[in-house]
Length: 128
Image 1 (tube, rainbow, N blue to C red):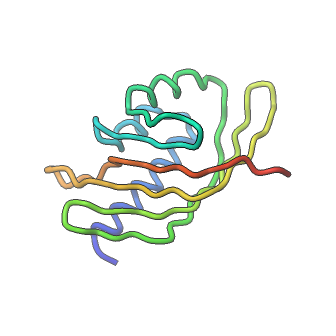
Image 2: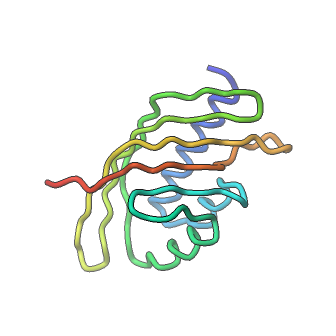
């Protein structure tokens, strides 16, 4: 495994840990300013909308795991294919389970940090 692959795996681990901890600032620091997210049933949105949506999640908790299936590094660009299992619990105790694949494009910044640039999130609701 290369240093870049290790750094990308660390980015995913940090993202998951920060999401579980409700640490939106850390999650935002892991994405480029012109990041774009694509999710089923919605228009693509950027970092500012992500920030707004995160701000509306007060009291919501996240738990889950990430299983990286593929990382390909191409110079200062990389893509990541990942499977995520996620449990979301609302303040009133409602539990939602979502699972699926993501396809993420990452960019290496001049300082050597990898950041998320594009993310196609195909998580869907899982029935118990």
